[in-house]
Image (cartoon, rainbow, N blue to C red):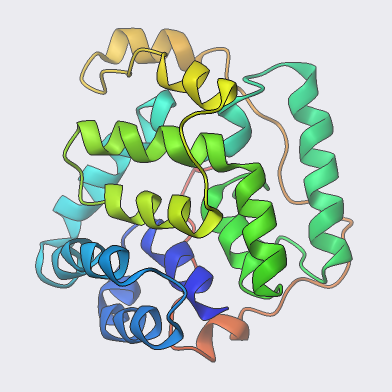
Length: 232
């Protein structure tokens, strides 16, 4: 479904290509009807900001939210495995799922990066995509709530994914995540201490099969997720 491709783009690092694609993203979200109308309307705030705000301001806000706050990390396994050995096994399993579905990573993002997962879901049947999202539902619930607390315009995007996954915050896993204190992205010393132990070595396998064709994005007029220099 193109809706998941659109969400992948919305949760990616802002770029001129993303800003130019806002009308196409808006059209996709309205045309496919995957989102409940109220959720589709709520995403308009972020779309308007992406289209109108200064790019450097958008990029600075994105980094402050998702790169400097561990509790808002878009790397999903960070929230459940941290840097334990279990995370490595989960990464391998996810890579195998991607490959079995004809999707190989070609960028530097980790397999559990939410925009990457959404890109994969865009080429899978809707029922399968909902099931996979539901498996990560407790993480999506926590991210949506944390963004809502910050009054972030990204909050409706996560809330919409929660709705698609039909996830709730009632589970023990969701409650455990919601009980964690939010990171303060302005407390650089504290954040450095957290991230010092978060050196992840997983990434795209250079020995993987043929890379996924990036023209899938072009066919729906939504740019591929940009790769940021120095990001792993």
